[in-house]
Length: 139
Image (tube, rainbow, N blue to C red; front, side):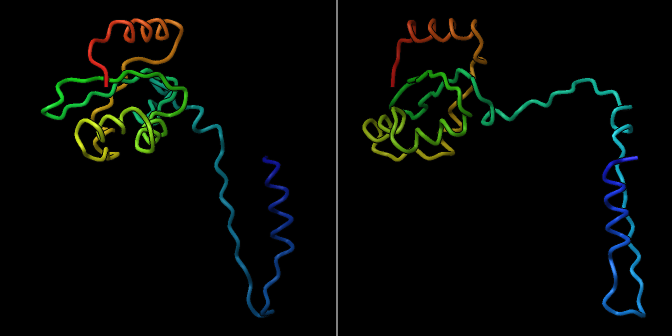
């Protein structure tokens, strides 16, 4: 049995109703760990949503009509969502939208125009260097 079983049995014995004429019926259900272990899953890991991933190389593209396809490529070890929040505070992307378009960058706009290029591994680090050396348009 479970170690919690003994503890819960002691608790059941110690529970006394405030009204002596009534009785308390307490039912405790146990979830055994054997049942989930019998199930076989094709893929044991679940994929995180794009904005919840960390250690990624990402690309933000400004798609406002006058601007043209200007891109900013960056690498982050924190979650993409937190990094995008930094853009809205005081970063390169915010400065670009303020100076070039005289608009305020919204979170929705930044999220829609940001994509994950690669996961940060050693090979991804080299591809990040490749992207930054060969990009033609900068924000």
